[in-house]
Amino acid sequence: MTDPFALFHEWFAQARETEINDSNAMALATADARGRPSVRMVLLKGHGPDGFVFYTNFEGRKAAELLENPHAALLFHWKSLRRQVRIEGVVGPVDDATADAYYATRSRDSQLGAWASDQSRPLPSRDVFMDRFAEVSARFEGGPVPRPPHWSGFRVTPARIEFWQDREHRLHERRLFERDGAAWREGLLYP
Image 1: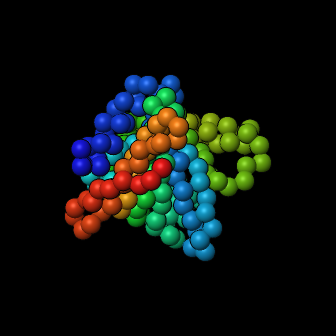
Image 2 (image 1 turned 90 degrees about the horizontal axis):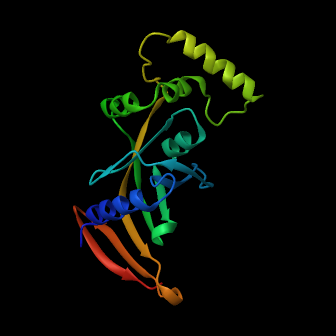
């Protein structure tokens, strides 16, 4: 298979069947404008030939870093399959319609949490957050919860995708796909 998106789709489908929790969890590595790295786990919420999508508060650290330095790396590690996928590329915000459509699928409490959280900022106590959550719940009681203006998604458009398969005696298989204009070049890497 020489289409990295078809291969990812196949591996991801297998991971959804075998991973106990959060088969869509991925490590997201970013760097600020000075090149200082940061990594955290986020959840993949969409994927296809146009890229890999996740959502976040645009006032938090990860969004600030992505807006300063629009390059990122993703890592999926599916221990049950003994596989990982590494993705590197440029990042840009999703359009409002895409963000609205995904936001509408979230649970009501998750929607309310997006309003209540000042993501990545210091929190004096858990009670302060829960009080804010209660205030937001009362504010939107009985009606829909609109998407906050500071909450949206990012799409990582890959330039490089590596598929790593564990093999005995550390004789791993590493397939590398690199974007060459509109096409993809495929090769192998030594383990």
